Figure 1 (cartoon, rainbow, N blue to C red):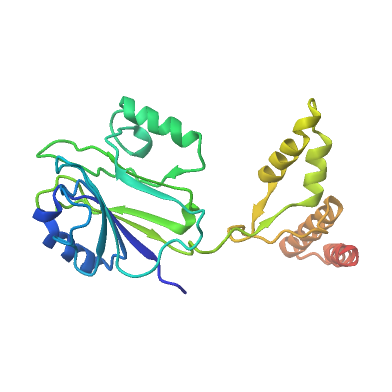
Figure 2 (cartoon, rainbow, N blue to C red):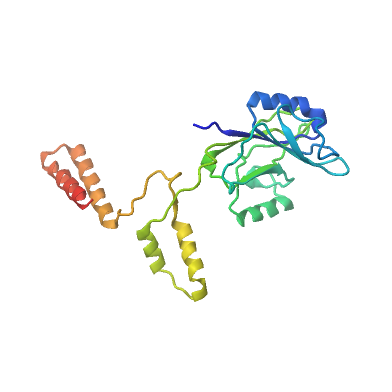
Amino acid sequence: MTSPIKILQYNVQSLKSNKNYVDFFNTSNNIDIVCLQEIFSHDNHTTQHNLMNFNLLRKTRIDGYGGVGIGFKKVLFLNNHENVIIAGDLNARHQVWGDRICNTKGKIVVDEIRNTNLQCINSGAITHRTGNSAGTAIDITLTNINSSYTKWHCQQVHLGGSKHFPIIVEVTNSSKKPNYFIPKERLAQELAQLKFSDLENITTEIDSVRNRIKIDLNTSRRTPKNWWSDDLKKLYRLHVAKRKKANHTNNVEDMEGPIIATSDWKEAV
């Protein structure tokens, strides 16, 4: 099994001042990728204050404040180019990701999320605290990766002088592409109920139905069958019910029921 990819998301508030703390954290937690905010640097190309075992790609500001850095320990990332992770300190507060209040930026982010296929995977933990304050949740992680493949954890410790907490995002099985199955019987039923008001939109409406009913076999708990019809469902349920009744009562007269029901179901299959 492929080991998960570990991503550090962190508002470092000066890489120069907190480099040693981040190096220690990366080594202790086997971090593969770092996403840093507020690195406080003037130069996009400098190797000064690089993290141990990481080469940082930087985007800085002229005034030396703000700035971001992305670093890779080894040549890996999400093999599926359709996978997206957005991580950062957005200064957006909202109850959706665990903050006590909702501000204007928070409302904007929530509205934007609803218009995309992204989801917020924050656990609800506080990500920033100053002094004895209650703290805020302003460091947010958004992704379109299935939630069963991601883990989000905020370690509520201050590294060096930053008032933000380091966040670890784990991604597993991210390279597995969706394996979609379209239930043909349900597709036919759904299409029979459509009323095409505009002939030019027929293809769009059919695609909409297909996307709504499709099943990703990678995440489904069962494997759908093309031949599984409503009649087979009824026979299977009858077969199960008869067996349960016979096991419950232990009466001889109830033993014949499941034998007949099972025979009928197997013959139909």
